[in-house]
Image (cartoon, rainbow, N blue to C red; front, top):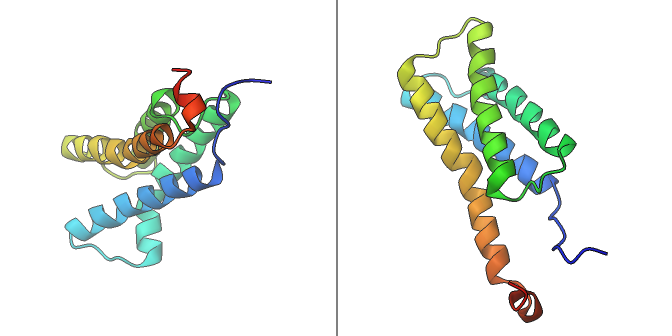
Length: 134
């Protein structure tokens, strides 16, 4: 039996990532005065949601701890941004340099900060016996 702490359930992390990718699309549409209907937002978000799904498949196949910033969070972020932008371009939308920069930074914050908060929370709330092992 391993002494490593059990991994948290995957579903809250997948759901949080998906909600934040949708929020990214909604914020972008709002900042450009575009329609904010559900289908409009999903129309903007879909390439990044598809890329997010791909990133989660990779994380699961490589058996990474999905709650950690490194390497799982960085992998999820990198695949979501790069593949999302590629899908966006492949299906005829634009990706101006300013958009690429904003998408990269915003998705880094949205996909990495929740994991960082989780790691800090988890570290802070370990049992005293677990703290002495470090």
